[in-house]
Length: 280
Image (cartoon, rainbow, N blue to C red; front, side):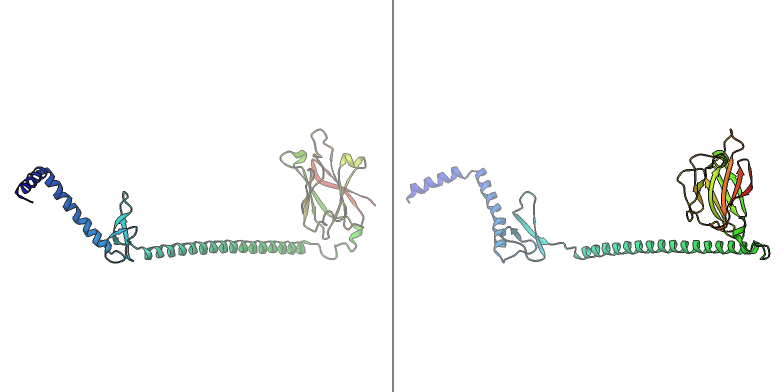
């Protein structure tokens, strides 16, 4: 290269290297320096530690995680991983303990409720037994002496008392209340209204359909259809008593035993006392 060639190159460089181009070249050089450093970091070792560059191919060491931005997830910086194993284990243990405590509390409530029901049942049975014993004792004390009791109850008439409740169904269900005042049980054989009885009609009570009426006990004949219980029975569809027939009433047939003499008891609607006529 001669002197003229050197002069031409110098003039060309002066034309190209303007102030603006020179500033751009400097900025480009400074921008390449951090990339070179990061490239060196990527090339060091098989995994990254805190502050190292991480990519999809070059990850972080154990205990560190690659923190990336939402814009570029393929490139990031290694940072210490935040662990919450202890708190997680503690939370799981606390939840299990809470569940176990709730189950135990529920079992305790159920056991307490069962104990209360059992205690209430025991107390109720004790009261019933006490009441039954007291009634037996009262009947024993109130029963007539042995010299006044009939020696052959089959030839006697039961000592029954009657009361008409709610005649005509006014104020409630019309009911004929029968009480046994004798020292022996009475068998209830049949029941009828006086008007039906005069025509030969009577509702017969089959043997065993109603338990014998024990001394001191009562039984109810209700003017209701299809009603039955230990101490009552529904024997007709409508009331016996009415305002248009003041002479009507009830007829009850009873005996000491199914094979003894039957006795018919007449009870008027407006008169609770009974008269009796014995049938063979």
